[in-house]
Image (cartoon, rainbow, N blue to C red; front, side, top):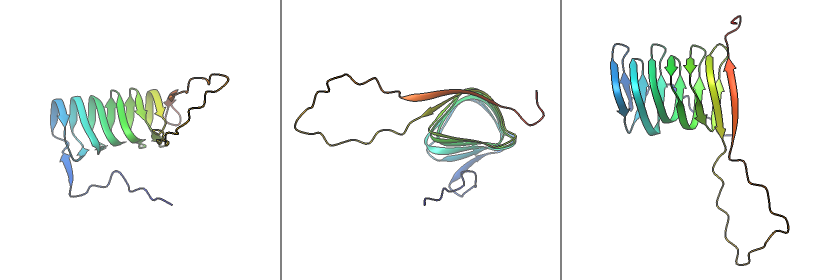
Length: 154
């Protein structure tokens, strides 16, 4: 069985943005990032992980491989692999990802587009077979509108 590594442990090869730092504009990089400050604009970490710490405040469109949110996000979130909303997370915006985890107590308001894994390539046969009845068009993704509220919230 595959064991997944915790996404929010801080390693030496992870860049850090402290809680007193404010970034306005585009934030991009080619390494994992731990963000505990404030960002307004766009965050692009294609192929890398983003952890938004408990003091993190983000008003931005976010793109990364894996995203773990402890803080506040106002904007759309797109992860190639996985999005995790921890119990202290407050997220307002749409999420596009393959896998999602929402802990009890996290606040989320928006839509979730849970995408399928990319289909594996099949070998091409020499003879093409034509079906008697055309097959229906495949559905590429599932759209779920969801809202997770803390216990006792109305």
